Amino acid sequence: MRDREANAPWQRLRRNLLLLLQLIILSLLVLALARPYILAPKVVSGSVIVLLDASASMQARDVEPTRFDAAIQVVREIVDGLGTGDVASIIAVGPQPQVLASVTGDRTFLRGVLNDVTPTHGPANWKAAFALVSAGATNAAETHVVIVSDGAVRETLPALPGEVRFVSVGGGQDNLAITALATREGPEGPQVFLRAANYRTTDTEVLVEFSADGILFDARRLSIPARGSADLTLVDVPYNAGFVEANLATDDALPLDDRAWAVHAPPVSGQVLLISEGNLFLERALGALAGVDLVRLAPSQPLPEEPYALYVFDGPITGTLPSGNLWLVGPRASIDDGFTLRVGGTFTETAITRVQGDDPLLRYVDVSQLHVLRARAVDPPPGARVLIGAAGGPLFFVAERPAGRLAVLTFDLRDSDLPLQIAFPILTANLVDWLMPRGRADLPSAVRAGEAVPIQPAPETTRLWVTAPDGARYELPVSEHRQPVFAATDRLGIYTVEQEGQFAQTAPSLAYFAVNLFDPAESDIAPQNVIQVGRAAVSAIDQKEAQGRHEFWPWLALAALLVLGIEWWAYYVGQGRRPRWPHWPWSRRDTAS
Image (cartoon, rainbow, N blue to C red; front, top):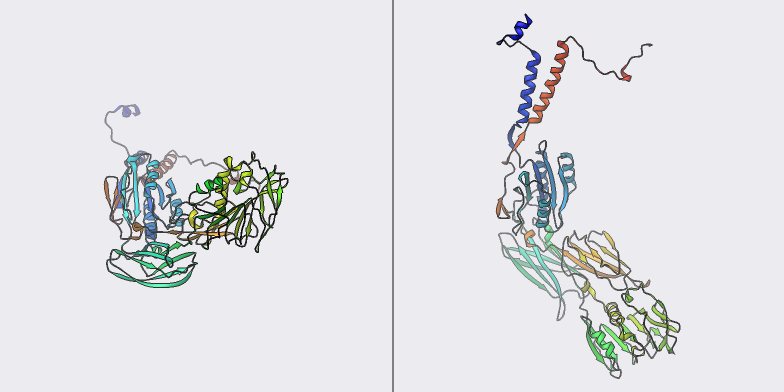
C-alpha cells in the first residue's frame, strides 16, 4: 500500500504543519530579499554626506535660538531617518572644514558628534569642503550630499559627485554690520575711518561707540540707507591708543559683526642719521636696506632738532648724545650724560677669543675670518651683551640705556677687513632690525578668523606668546630656521603678541593684531533658496515634505527567523522527542544533597 501510494501520479496534499511553516519561512525570505518599502518623511538615505554650515552667519538669531541650532536639528533628523545599511559622514564647514564623522552607520556616535560641534567666527570654506567630499565619495552613483546652510554663498561652487540636496535655514535679514575699520595718521593726530552697512529694507540710524584700549571716548549717530552703507571719520582719537574698538549700539539678528577692532601704532620714521667724516662702506651697507632713508651729517655740524629712528656715530662723538637708538663705530670719546660709557686707549690684541654665535644679532654672521688691526678699550655698561670678544677687550657688544638701545663696534671699519666680507651687510641688517623699532610692520594689518598669522620676532627675542581675546595664552617656539606662525585665530577681537628678550631688566615688548569678520557674504543674512553647484542650480527643499524610502525587510527577516524556530520545535514534538538542551556544569544538581 505504501509503494502504491508513493507511485500514484496524483495525490491530495496532506495536511503537514512542517510544510506549512517552511512555506511561510520561504515567503518571508523572498519578501525580505525584495526589500519592500513605504514612503516616509525623509531627506535622504543610502550613503549620505552632510555638509553642515558652521560659518559666522549661522549665529544669526532670526531662528530660535540660532540658525546653527536649527541646522543641528535638521542633521539630527537626517541621522534618525537612516535605515539599516545606511551610512553617513558629517563635515562642519568653517574657515577650515572639519570631518566630524566618516562613513558610519552608528547613529549614537553621529548624535554624539553633533552635541560637541560649535559655530565659528569666520566664513565657510566651501571649496575645501567640496574637495573633501570628492575625495571621500567612492561610489558616485550611490552618494547623496546634503548641504544644510543659510545659503550665504556668493560664488559658484564646483560640481559634486552623486545627488546634491540643499536644506535652507533662516528666515530674516534684520542686520547691521561694520564692514571696515582702520586707523591712520592725520595732520593733527590719529584718525579712525569706519564703514557700516545696512542689510535691512528700511533706512536706519544707529549709535556708533568708540573705545580706545577698552575706554569709551566718543559716540556718534550714523544714518545708513536701506541696503546701503555709510562712512564715518573720527579725528579726535587719543594719540597714545594701542587699539580702537567700534561698536554699533543695536539689537539685530547677528551681533557678531556689530563690533570691530583696529590696531593703532604711531608712525615709525625710517630715517637714519649717519654722523661720519666719510665712510663709503657704512653708507652703502645702510643705504641698501629696505625702508631706510639715510641722511648724512658731518661731525662738525650740529645735530638736527627733529628725531631720527637711529643715530650712527662713525668715529668722533661731539656734543650731547640724542635720545634714541645709537650705533657707535670706533668711538673715540667717553660718554657721561646719565649713561656712562668709558672709552680708553687702543689695543692690538684683537684675535677673536669668544663669539656668541647663538645670539640672534649674529644670525648668519661668520666672523671666523675677521681680522682687526686695532680697537678701542671700551668698558661695557652693566647688563651689556658682549657678542664678539678678543684678548684685549670686547670688539662688539649691545646694551640698553634709558634713552634707547645701544650697539658698539669698538674698532674702526677701515682698521679691519670686515667691510670686505659678506658678514658685514648681514650684521648691518640684523643690527638695524634690532635698533629700529618696527612696531606693527611685522604683523598683518587685517586678519580674518581662521587665517594663520606669520609673526616676525625681533632679533633678540627668546620667548614669544600670543594672548587671544578670550584670555587663552599660547607660547610659540622661536627658532632661527623657522618663522613662528599662529593659527588659533578662531575668535574675533584683539590678539596680543608678547616678546621677551635676553635682557632681564627689559620689560617684554607688546604688539597687537586684530581679527575681524568684514565679510559681506556673512553679514547679509537674508537666506538664499538657490545655490549654484557646478552647472546646476540646486533649490532648497522643504524637509517636512521630503519623501524617502523606509525599508522594513529586517522585520521580515526577523519574522522568518521566528517561524524557523517554531518549525524546529514542531519537528521535535512531532517525532515524539524532547529538545536536548545543553547541560552546563553550573546547571547540574547535586545528587548527594
